[in-house]
Image 1 (cartoon, rainbow, N blue to C red):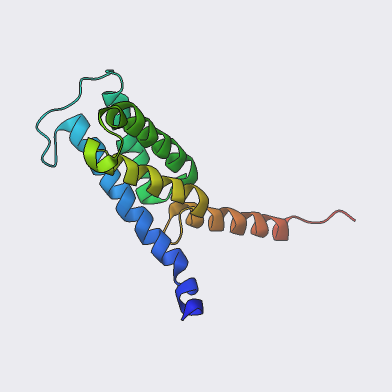
Image 2 (image 1 turned 90 degrees about the horizontal axis):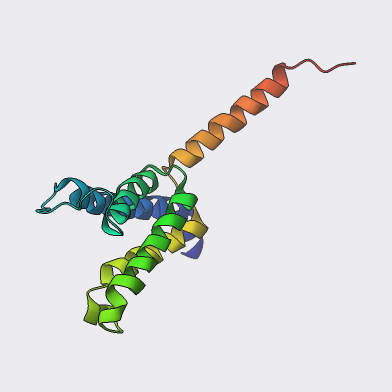
Length: 146
């Protein structure tokens, strides 16, 4: 049973990354453009709301695609840690009391992706395979000097 679950791990991580990235990008799109049920948008350049929304949209999209997953997750995790400790935690200690559950959950989800990478289905893996294949192909075609 364990071996079977281990073999499915890259696919589970890939699906996890896609869902988390999509949810995060939607949150940013709602804040920036008022779509997906958003009534208000944040004014451009306002601290920290506009910057957080840009990180959510861009970082979420990158994570969704599996492109630069570790770097995007690092920035997104840090942004959510900042959101939790600066915006939510001063109101109460526990996330359930200060409405910081979403910030805490996103922070830890992205923290996990820093260490796991994109998993299956990510552009990171696709591009790595293409570049390693191109490098191998160019080595095979390059004549060796005698």
